[in-house]
Length: 136
Image (cartoon, rainbow, N blue to C red; front, side, top):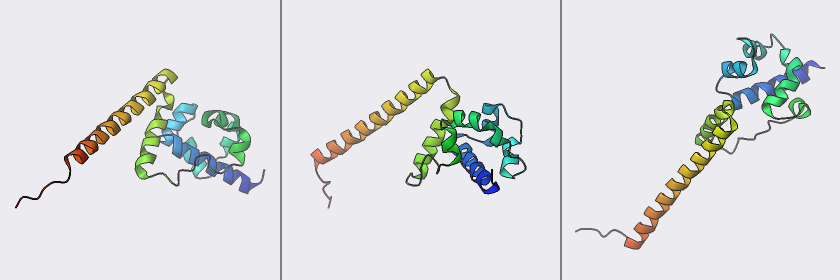
């Protein structure tokens, strides 16, 4: 494989690590890798990720073909900083058992809906009262 292809794959893998894990160390723990493995990838001291493509494709839930020739699979260019923060927080839950992740999603959805309903109730009540009168 040509060096430029290896570099593109390296960049994709590192971007996925950054988008889905809190830190390189968290990724290394999840994958059972030694300390400084990702650091060595970042510094182009090692291309051991090439031998791990099947395991990496499973971890990131993409097929190897996509991993080797894909634009970043999640375009986050239109997300705000707050949305990116929430997405990173949620992605950290990947280590939890699926029933706990489902409960987390349901809790988040319920909480957001409660806040939206409360906000809408306040807006509706304010409209009914009409504009505030100036004292004078």
